Figure (tube, rainbow, N blue to C red):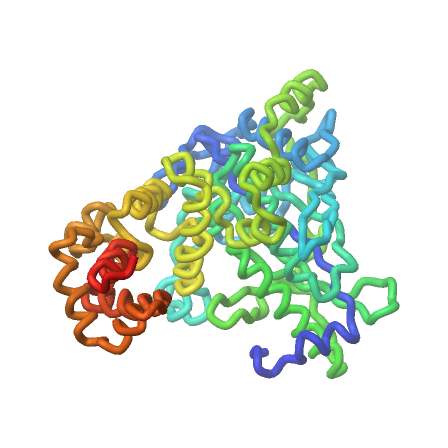
Length: 500
């Protein structure tokens, strides 16, 4: 179903109420895998970080990664969850080519953390998203479909399997049904995933880089006619890997469900694939129920029973949480709610802080990341933090502007150069010849030329209309390709015209 054939979003919400459930998988930043000692380093040669345990060889026994358990408890505490005094792993049985054991070691009815919540802000309102559970499990391998145009199995000539990722520690965080959001449902989903990502990063348990698959969201969506209590049949859009895509996927599914239901059709409980190019989803596989996975307790692992003393010790290690940090920074920076929310929505808060740490003042750091660099990220369709420019480089650009060596126009050209891979800001300035011209001898000729070419404007200035000097300043800036020191140009023009 294409985006052009859908019922409008507004019409869909006149008839139906959306109900969401979000399942977020977070790859933990441990040095080794969940049940073996294989490295988790990203980018290694395919199948170079495997062993009999993560490949599921007969007789190879798993051992639980203690750091992963600690990370899971800290995540649960930060999400206001209860921490289990006793829990265990289970085998989730299903056949997938990237699951060498033909089962996933996960947690089923006994998760490490449960019954929590996370508050998020959307358009001035606080939404409490209730957490059903946060449980430990292992990641699957990776299928590479070769020869096709889309990278998916359909149309591919053959597939390759890389088991390096198999066994990477995961935390899956599952919400309870999110009801009542109405037209704000896509924004609530996006805000929740954004807040969760900030929380995970603050805890230091994962970099949570969605573009690298370190954090991904399965977005469940169902519709029910207004006034009805019973939930509709849900679809599950798998592995959505950006905040913008979470919002788009929910919006599309609301429109798709409404179109199917309004035409008298039936929603199929299935997984869906999200397509970045047009924001649509397509069918994956029929979604199994829990009993179809034939869960049973993992016989090769002992239960996990964290002591209350250890849990409270870990509670004491929790950092300042993102919501509290935002409130503190808002007070320190003197910005209003809208400005702070704009920084959060743009995903620039961390890079602004890093830029300040690199020497920039807060106003300059906010200006460049929230303005120019956010615009560049939007043009490229990427997260702003993934742009090929560092906070240290932005701080240097801000320092050059503050020192009078660049103006804003030239600074934007320096940013162009850095983003294009031309080197550090100073190297770009040198190579492109972008420094502000403030030397009187260099500016004098351009000033005289502007006065001679605009005699009428010059006479107005002599006659007392000093505000007209802007036109002459603009002429000099054009002649010097924006490199003149505008303040000094104004002073020289007024001196030439005998105006104090």
